[in-house]
Image 1 (cartoon, rainbow, N blue to C red):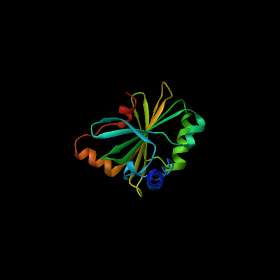
Image 2: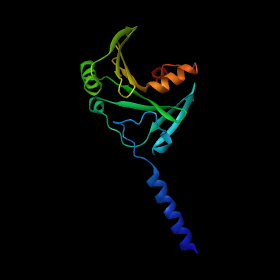
Image 3: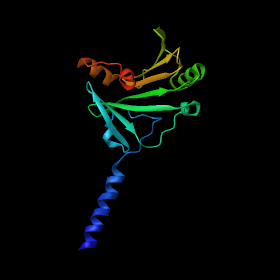
Image 4: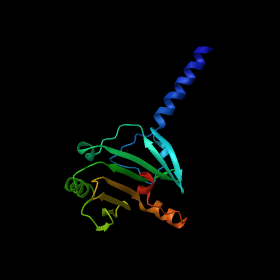
Length: 167
């Protein structure tokens, strides 16, 4: 009898492990249910957006240039955004990495001490907004899925998620 229970538990554990999808931080599953992926821990919810740390392996090209902190945001459980804080990455290196990954910058402007660049991926309906503080050299970006951003706007809960991340 004990052997039968142990085998049942083992089968359930294998089935649970097999059902989880592998998360790839280089190919983000925007709009998908984040609960389908292992390794996420929600640490905060604010204004309709839940914030998660990822405990699995993730290596972005920017990691070789300095420390990078990553956070993933969801709306109604679906992946909405990747938010990053980068410490002291060279401006030209950062711009080259973004242009290589996302194509040419769509828009650039100054907002106080922040230089801001915007990249758009119209095929996947994604936007990347990067900010670099001209005094401290710290950069941050939010890479988000436009349909979920529009959903937040409709709910009148729009916010700059990079500001929430760095409060």
